[in-house]
Amino acid sequence: MRALAEYPLVSPLLTTIKRYERPLSAISMVAGFIFDNYFFERVDHPATQIVLAAYLVVAILSIVLIHFIEADAEPPALLVKAHPLFVVATQFALGGLWSAFLIFYGRSALTVTSWPFLLVLAGMLIGNEVFRQYHSRLAFNCTLLFLAMFSYTIFMVPVFTGTMGRPTFVLSGVLAVGAFLLVLFMLRTVGRERLLKARRGIVLGAAGVLASINLFYFTNVLPPLPLALSHAGVFHSVVKEGDVYRAVSEPLQGLMWYGLAMGGPEMHVQRGGSLALYSAVFAPIQLRTNIVHIWQRYDEAARLWRNESTVRFRIVGGRDGGYRGYTTKSTPAAGRWRVNIETSDGLLIGRVPFSVRLGSAEGRTMEILK
Image (tube, rainbow, N blue to C red):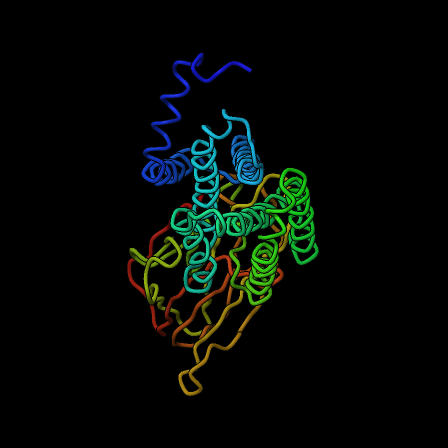
């Protein structure tokens, strides 16, 4: 092996990286978030899959190499010099994964229900920078890595299988656990003693991640990724004509981004009239699943939401603007209403609030929903 002196550019570079390791780690994490936010559009795009897979590979290799350097009594001199570079690579890869997950899960989530999971992702992104001491970093990085693997398989398994639901979620967990055990085997191979010292933290961290994500899923807190609500709105009527949906709305109260208004629009309905709820739900190519429109009215006396109508229909993925569909509700009573748009297993995709007032509206307009 050539001496380091024979690499005139390598040694100064590694020395500089070591000197500025902390700010470089923070910069790399921010750079990963900016990169993801700019380039990632669709969760099922091949470029997205390649980049996320590359992040995982870099994170795994960097963690293994750092562990090897720390575990070996006499590691190669070049690897010792490159240690700060591997730390930065780990920070960048994990930071890139968390930023991508925040972007995609954030697009899919309804904050009012999914904020605990989004808070966990944000906490991991920050903790990736804060917890830097090695003895805690091995266990913490392994916990981060397992959370990254599970978060990744949750939405990538539906992309490849074209299915959603509890069996698909369970399969995602099985694949994540299997991949994590393989990484632990690699760590054991290159540094058994040091891994044994950290095994309690690793086991507790991984078990906590597994339990938390399952809790989030079965309590309907987990965002329904890879599904995402593109548009939704309440109308007086919706009619499909070829590839175009035509809707009748009240002035300035038609199609809206879900959650934009706190109370939603006020809809004037004549006695015996009806309303229609339109939604466009993005789904990856080849994914076929059911979504549900649950019409709910607020019972002022009991102070709770009551289900008035539940309509289930099938969607097919692939369209950039989302799979479009609508459901109707006849003779809605006056008061506060909302329609929950959910997956078949109860994950909330979006929610459209509105209020109903009996009477006729003036100046209704026609909108084209493409």
